[in-house]
Image (cartoon, rainbow, N blue to C red; front, side):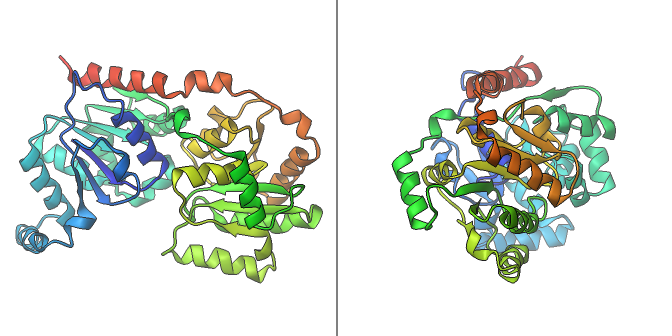
Amino acid sequence: MFVTTTTKATGAETTLLNLINNLDRSKFQPLGIVCRFSGQLESQYPSDIPIYSWEKYQTKLIALFSLAKAKLSGINYYENFLDEIHKSLKPDVWYINSIIQPEAINYVQKQQIPCLVHCHEVEQMLERIEQSDVERLVNYPLGIIACSHTSAQMLKILGRTNNLEVCFPCLDTQKIITDQNQASKIRELLKINDKTFVWGMSGSTDYNKNPVRFVEIARELNVQYPDTHFIWLGNNPNSGLDTYAKKYAKYLKIDHKITWTGVLNNRNYYDYLQVVDGFILTSSKESFSIVTMEALYLGKPVISFDCGGTREIIQDGMGHIVKSGDISDIVEAMTRVMSQPENYQFAVTNLLNIYNLSEQTQKWNQILTKYFYK
């Protein structure tokens, strides 16, 4: 049974989707996927795997009885939901996708259910869980899969030294379909000149992805290069930070140079990504960065703060990792890309040899076999 946080298109969920779609069914039977929140990836999972959403479950009348039962028994509402699904499906093992699921790890420990945990996080996410959750994470799972060496290092520092694997996120290049004509139409729609240099960023407009920093970079770069435009792909529409970033852009009188696309479907997403000439990763921390891989695959040089995981991706000629947190330093790196584009002509063959779908899903199935298939 797979237990994850959401079926929205985050890096962790896209990774899980790719893995489940390539699960070795001759050895493993997926009984169900349990999530807190529903999202656009649900339709892309195999149709024979039921999805149990806590968000949808709460809208049903049966949830009222479940919540009452949980309150009487003194256990967490969500943990009670997990208990009901587990007793219904009777899985042999749990696959917990993300360390930020303390209820799930607590439940499997109490019930002595074998589990693997897939860690997509680095240290800034630890503030969301308590000390006892960290101790449980380090000591209980049969194995932990880290999404990168950066993530694995965090787990080692916490005390996890055995049964620790690294399996990288991967690109499903067959899904990365772009249409240059459509990209040109998007430029026309956004009233962006063909000669205008466009910088892009992709992700939820949350504190870590740092849309405020994105706005400040746009302002400073436009002082030096007025013929630039910025596009943020994705958003978090119910967030106050999302609202603040957009109003901040207006306050700085730079809003006419920034486009916020909102959530995009796969095809539109890659067409918008094709529009950009360079990619600026504003995140403070990343365990890996699938969006960086996507940008590089489309031939876009990447400028990134030294957020961790991009050290394992960006190679010479692909862009720059800026060590300091100063806006001026990252703008200086961006101007190098804009003024000397001939220095950023690169091939991604070496990266695809490592981070391709076939290689990583084969490794993942080998890990599952190692721990569970006898």
